[in-house]
Length: 83
Image 1 (cartoon, one colour):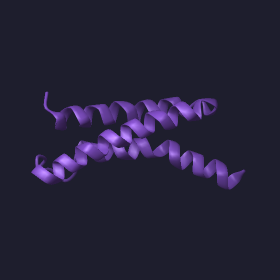
Image 2 (tube, rainbow, N blue to C red):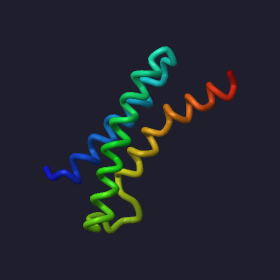
Image 3 (tube, one colour):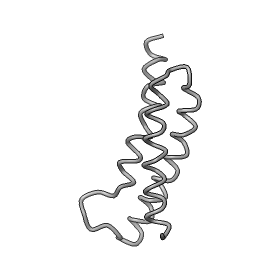
Image 4 (cartoon, one colour):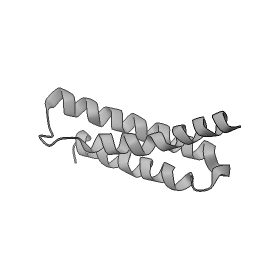
């Protein structure tokens, strides 16, 4: 498995994991940790896709991982604003 597919899969796994961990708000720090790892791998995936033009479809799977990894940060921002 090449780095492009691996980084896309890992970003999806960690993005989904960060969303599931976020269901229990007391584990917010672990969710943010998984989100940082997922966001890093999704950035690698998007970079490789842009550099080598691997995916010919509308969007890369790294974008989905990036959106999933952004949910804990958005949740934290909402907690700060409401608090």
